[in-house]
Image (cartoon, rainbow, N blue to C red; front, side, top):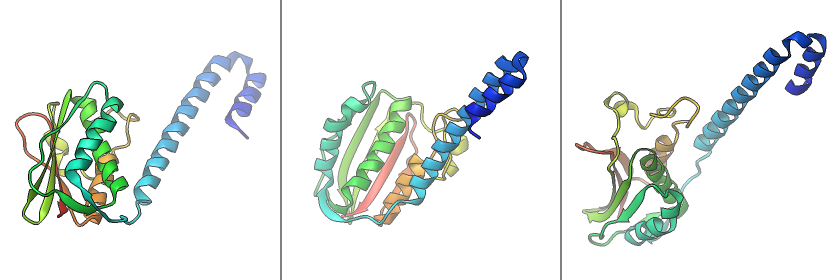
Length: 193
């Protein structure tokens, strides 16, 4: 029996409890919506496919990302710093875009500026993301890339973005790490050049 029908039937039988029943119905619907978001997030984490690798210039990718996605976070100023060296890597463009989106979305929650620097370092292409926000609380740093780790209120976000991003980077034979900073949050993506 659907929840609305059940509440209507209960109201018919117990009209004096109508207000309490409607409040309970709303609470149940909110919990079901939360469960739906949780299930969707968990499914998206479990369904990450294998990367479809093609050569891309990560410096150009970074510039295009900043230009294209700046309107997505109007309160966050995205800056692609001047690249250093040959920044070509073999990547799945859509998956790497998801990592960029996840990192920028986290910065937009806590910062006003996000600077993205792309450079070549030995056999790797490095992309550093540095924001001017509040940084990552020390108590969650050790488990930051685990699923369901979040600094946001319960029900606001699922805490899967960094776990998904880390998995994507590992699937590219690269990595994603949190850097120590005195201010803001800083993440480093590394990819084989």
